[in-house]
Image (cartoon, rainbow, N blue to C red; front, side, top):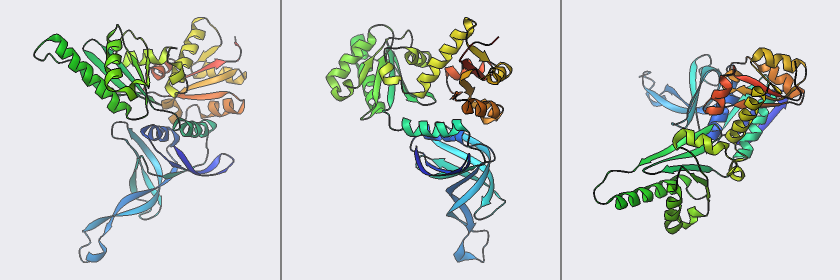
Length: 345
């Protein structure tokens, strides 16, 4: 994410941003709220100038519109964000329009209130864009899954299974290993770090294939163990310490650690609170060190006052993604919880 302009008076004003990745579009989904005014270049149908006698003939024109947002849609696999609402500035004021925001589309967001956690999210998105991409490749005998570590979770990139094929089992297995190695290389491209993991010794055999055929990729691989592949294997990798040097800066890894800390405190009747009522009480005591809020709850504005007061009291507000397991676990607690500075009765 790039910040193009920031013009704030207190917590009100305009911030212009340029999304540079799918992660940035995901961040924008949570930065933009219903009622915000968003400006961006877009296409609007207008009557063709050369054919005034046929007003039904329309052409698409590029214009800059300001839309008061009513609905927000993020489509992970299509790589776009849609903002639907009423035009407040530009042509056809009062009509409805949808802004299609893609990677590379600059936009300006005007808010009456930029919460501290939203400003922190922008800073985080800018910082994350400077960090290397991370690929997680999980393999067991005859099956492999490859995912891209995003700030909202692990996005599945490929699933590969060993075909029955003709000929010897050794030939089939060798072909499978080559296919997996090539898929990892294609997903990682030129610079991504790769975590290769899985149960048993299949991953070591795959690493030998990569060492011999893809030496540049081999330099960027860290090895780890998991008990399974697929989404549960991804989550297992995120929780393990062996790849901490690669994952310690990633958003989802931090969420996984925080939720583990929270459940440990809950299990020991320690310094934790969960549910809006308990968290509200902890906030009133000034006890909240880290406030954990599910993105779905934050978007609905139900805990705005709590987030603002915690931030003002120098507590940290962490918005959890609902796309992955830590967010699911937080949802089971009502979508809001807190790690405390001290235990309250």
